[in-house]
Image 1 (tube, rainbow, N blue to C red):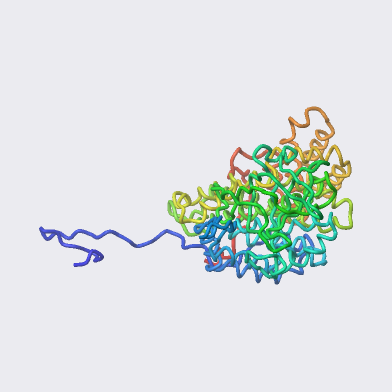
Image 2: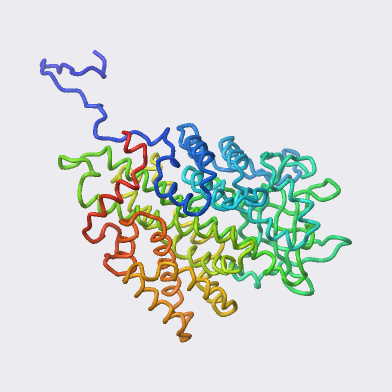
Length: 562
């Protein structure tokens, strides 16, 4: 008798039941769904922020990234992590990082859809918003490959400080052909761009950098050590080094003009908490050839253009990780029963799910509003000033909210959420990343204060933006009035910065939600985030009929159809 039979006989002839291997009361994996078509908040925001023309393309992309196969690519790229091959078998230094084919397919998809370039080649109003929405969809599946995508996108504003370099590289940078070969750029159909800034003694304080640049004919030679260099397999890098005139920005290609490998060495890859598919490394410059970008001695001003745009993607990246986590929580709660009812039918669970959904929609709303500000900022000073101050404020708040939200979504799954086979473990490891990347929370707060002190138009832009909804809700009015009174109080600003910046962010979120989300979403967001009617943890919304509406609004279409 086989050990898979339903019963077996003991020596005494007693029938002993075999183990029960029936799988009941468990959800199947959430695959083969469309994260665009099934996201009411995203679809509403696309229309609100002037990108309705992109709906068909976003729906098509959503259908692709929601497939079981594409979701598997994200898993494979993280399980099979990049490997450094510093030397070939003969001892020649080759500085190659090799990736699983899944990583390259993820990169090819993002580049084919213009996540690295769209606003630079598409002049239609709303192109910034459309690109961010694409990032939102793809990032829900896999986060690590977004690092070189973001840096490639953000390199264009920095290169504009050196028009001849901008013109030389623009076509290759914005190409929608992904070419991963490690060959000179002039042999490639498309290139990617990285950024090497931080050093071990300085971190965010880049003025403490010690890398030196020495003029060599029409170029420069760099000597130094960079401590955190993500995506070292890019084709060209923006970096900082000191000249006799101060810290300056340089463009450093992987290959020298004579066709030989540039003189830098990848020392090792970082073993990180998360973002496993993305190779982060340490780099040593040994006379690496580079070209000056922008004015000598004004490197921070030059490269900050790139940093500002990567920070925008950090906001959207955190919103995407939160949405992915909440979608998984909804899916599990819809298929798991406890105490006679599905989890999603339990009042306490509905409060939690609604609260998580509020956070996601508010984060998405401010990210896409920022996208419109960047778009309109090309011709409108108010929008440019708003983007300048609201980007670091939003990065501070949204990215910090992600970690606890993802944990709560993980907890919905119970023990299932804590195992590596489930998607929640990877999402949880990804959640803190964007708060650290491109400037930690304190750096963002100081950046907001700097904008307030140096650019009066930035504070004025905040006022104009928030005044759009003054008079709509007394709770909001009181919150904004007190906020601006505290902003005018110049005492102990740095000590109070986290509180002020958080309040700026939630006031902006509330304003955007009042302008285009559902009434229930705006009302409960204001009640819980601005009016103080909220506990210290998610799931403590005040009792309201709006909770049921929010749960239904945030329900992924795959859940509703299951």
